[in-house]
Length: 207
Image 1: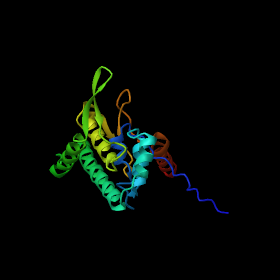
Image 2 (image 1 turned 30 degrees about the vertical axis):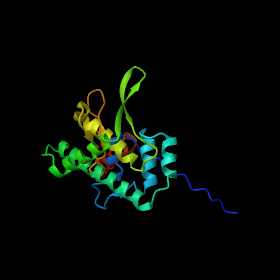
Image 3 (image 1 turned 120 degrees about the vertical axis):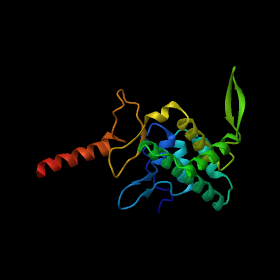
């Protein structure tokens, strides 16, 4: 008797220090000559990513997954998230390269920032005023709103000055550099850092 249980999927590598940058990194090998690898292949992947990033609880993600929504609507949300992702990537890499920020990318960010804001409302959290979300576990577009809002929170804050990218030319994953002297070079020392060390060692041996 064969099991109907689906194999567990590998978790996303959340090394950027912020969900907005981890989102950009879901297009892996973006600068590799062989072409990029898409890590958000489905709406379910999007739910996994948003949940692992802490923007949705596991309970909320499960409720969204069970919603009776047409496949084309889920696909539309995924396309919009990827449009947001590529606008963030365009802005981030332009900043890192000291280039002017492209107007189309800014317009895309503005569209999604405003859309996300329209689904929030002020509420009382004990004695404090706080933003809250309407129907966050009843709307399939919830991951898009959450990602747009967290992106706005980063890009419009002083933390955007800590934006860096991996020193590996074929990787260039984004991250927030919170190291003491702001000298972090790798997305993950265990991956790109060790890989580049090995390459330098091999080059020295060849010489």
